[in-house]
Length: 528
Length: 53
Ligand code: SF4
Image 1 (cartoon, protein in one colour):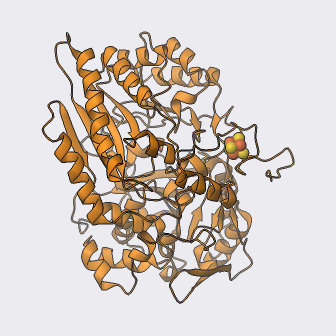
Image 2 (image 1 turned 180 degrees about the horizontal axis):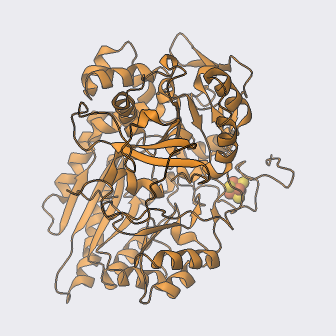
Image 3 (image 1 turned 90 degrees about the vertical axis):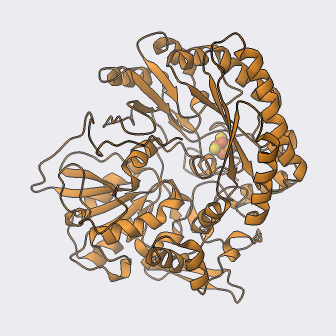
């Protein structure tokens, strides 16, 4: 969540309306009920590309022209941040005046100072784009394309930086990110959320967060104890969040400190190979009913390709430990359509789930109720800024067949449920994740047709398959190459090669090496 | 991540929300491009490279 400096700033929230008919009045803010369009600044926080169509809906609902180019002095400035934009802002670029790419704490103070100058719109935008770290104003850049339709060039047309270097907070100690609002009505329940760190050292090759938030950083455990204490004044439920919560140095002590009685701790992510006794005890004590394990792939070979770094023994061990500590239900995440996947790998998903069930039953025996195992099958979308950014996404028909294959193996197994993504939606997500700025045409059409993707894709001149199903050359200019997240393209290329050869990833030195480009020396120079 | 459906009005039952006087200040509408129950749950950005289930 963006933390806004509170002095002299009034920040109110707005959401997509609950009613489906957007004709029901203007978009208003939650706190004061005023029209959002009356604010000086509209700031979108976008975590998922699949929410881009909602950005258009919300702008229309607010009464603000959809295209940045159609806005004038009377309209609020429309800015956007959030990890979806960090990976690739281009598909939604035509609708946003300014993106803030990078961690808010390292951007907002300078942004707000300049924003409050009150300069005329164009002058203000140029000043922001030039002076604020991580600021990207799409209108000041122009793209050209090859005859085949790939990106040929991407250049500034005004005096603005060629590359957007995303700033990040080098050191998290002395900063806190936690809930300022506790709400009972969300997926986390009435929990006080505390961010334990950012970034993840594991380098799973499918995960965008694993590369753009490098280097991994954690807060000192002693500071977290203080933050959790503050939260306990309001609620006994505390959610520890981060990409790699189980990697937090001192997590065991933190769990032992609070997990015994006063707090009910939950975790946004845990690795199956890192379930220490303190952690599992805290989890059991919290009353959590379902724990998630993410093997992502069924076979050891394919887990090596994606660099998941978790063995079958880890997975089975985790299942056993969790159930033994009184957490009755398991949720297992898998992905279909991963690079190099064969029918044997798909088959291996069903085999692994059956083995997990075997362990699950053995431990559950003697307990009053036997829980449910839910296998969740996602469709893999190759994400920007990952080693798989060049890979083609699997065809929708093939994905359907693979889902059917797993379902037919597991469909009749007692205590096991299978839940699968809709491949068509994953395709749409891939368009929004991998497209260049011409994707605006698709988004406009989807909006005009009220979400009818098949019709929209037929109506536009653009061939979306070109973004989704084409393996890109490693020397091709990619739509998101103008952003510098630290990690070098050479490193990602090497990881892609190693993946296709089934070799494990280059381990992250946790700040002590110069291998991927994200860490710099004392003078700020990256490694070789 | 699971979405908990709720019949409650967005914002009802919140602790800590501040309702400030807007006079003479820069006003920001922080917009989450999703429904309240999903938007407020995404604050942790516990992101995985695909659609959250
Ligand atoms: S340079 Fe080394 S330590 Fe820093 S993020 Fe990259 S791999 Fe990790």
